[in-house]
Amino acid sequence: MTVAADRGPAAVVTRHIEAFNAHDLDALMACFSTGASWATGSDRFEGAAALRTLFAGAFEALSPRLSLQSLLVQGDQVACEFREDYCAGGIDRTDHIAGFFRVEAGRIFGRGSADSKDSQEEML
Image 1 (cartoon, rainbow, N blue to C red):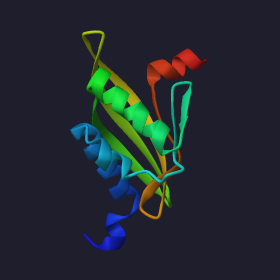
Image 2 (image 1 turned 120 degrees about the horizontal axis):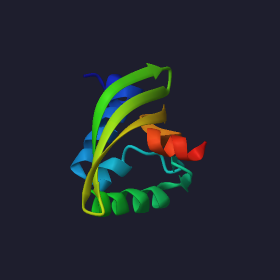
Image 3 (image 1 turned 135 degrees about the vertical axis):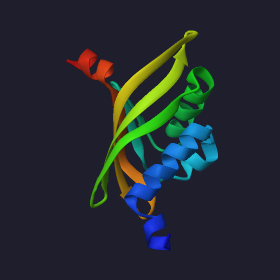
Image 4 (image 1 turned 45 degrees about the vertical axis):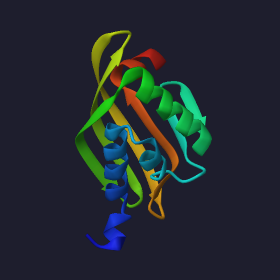
């Protein structure tokens, strides 16, 4: 893989997924720009420190794992469909979620998000 391809939007999001599944917080954070933001459900997180806290808490409390179902790239934008398996309150759960990313200079920048069908319905 060339350096340019390694920094392309699909490669960056793939590294994000791999780091997330390994619960490797440092590798996950290396995928984000310092000014990245994230939305999940109705919650929003701004900046690297907030994202680190969000993901560290999720790794500890939920032990989540993502399975990529589909990925679509258009320019610097990436849309993904995921299956997320996790444990909440001692109960194994599965959600089907969508993730949206903007990648600049080899890092996730701008608004990323992950919403399950359930959280989308709760927002209606």
